[in-house]
Amino acid sequence: MITPTENTSQSQSLLHLLWLASPALPVGGFSYSEGFEAATEWAGVTTEANAAEWLSDQLIFSLARGDLSVVAASAKALAMATVDIQRLSALNDWVLQTRETAEFRLQSLQMGRSLMDWLRNLAPEAAKSLDLPHHWKATYPVAFAIAAWALQNQGLQNQGLHHPSGEADGHQTVSAYAFAWCENMSQTAVKSIPLGQSAGQRILLRLAREIPEAVALACALKDEERQAFTPRLAILSAQHEQQYSRLFRS
Image (cartoon, rainbow, N blue to C red; front, side):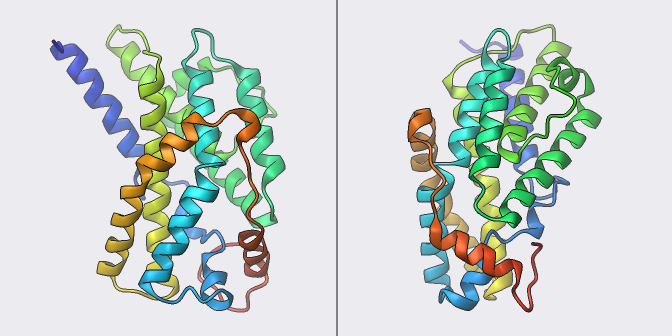
């Protein structure tokens, strides 16, 4: 039987993840297209149908095997009795080393920095308790896992409770990250092609249905199975850096 205190804790945890997945979160995710804008010009992604297919492939073959896997592994490192800072640092290094273009690297560092600044402002005690190296620059996937952990940890401390560990928390954090990405990219498709808002919602619906599969894959990956190899996307990202006219940041 779930007690009122446990129910409140679960509700707060869900609200924290919804908060992190919100497009209103001031980290600048809306300003990046992740190569999609170039795909509309050079890869024929010009309809609702092929936009949905493009983003679905990116979710399963790129995001799930890379960033989502990093979020899952980071959540595990944070759920330990003593947070494994070395593990977080290694995962962060992996993200930096596998970004295939300058704009992908810029995006991850800028969004990670913005999220950590936001966290230090909203949950300073929890952020401080991690005792991260001063020179350390968090990438966005690692920063997202840290923010989810810190908000949850501070909320439970305020209730005199302990932070729970386990796979369920990690799956929920990864799901929130995935949905935030899907929502942002569906809006990128609406603006880039362009499409109507109803088309964008249909694309988001398809992506949302595929999130559980992507999350399950990401959480099951071992370190040696994690990958960041999307040559066509990398080429389009590099082209986007020099695209003559664009809506999104590079």
